[in-house]
Length: 145
Image (cartoon, rainbow, N blue to C red; front, side, top):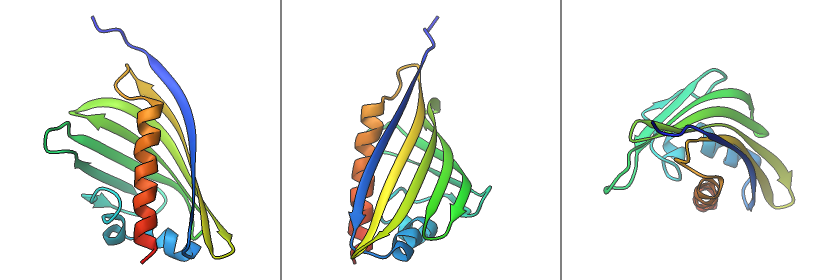
């Protein structure tokens, strides 16, 4: 029998973009723009209670499933969503993610906070934070144009 355990973790990644809060929020709320820096969603219903679902991964595997529900949306200021992450149909984590957008001189400071429960050693805080860092760097490239 496989040993079952959980590991809790929280991380924060901050970025400052030379783009308005409206433009950064739009990069999260518009499925076409979001697909340029995140996985292309198969379901995208950007409203409180709405769902975002995507499936994909590298050609050599595994297949990752991102399944989110939007819990709180304040245009140009805040996005809060809960999500599960599966790898090859095995649940690896459950998370709450908060995106805060703060207008600063010349742009927007984005504060991304994730509180996660990692399941059975299938994922780690360090791996998730690294992936989020890459994701937010890609977002920066999209909003800079």
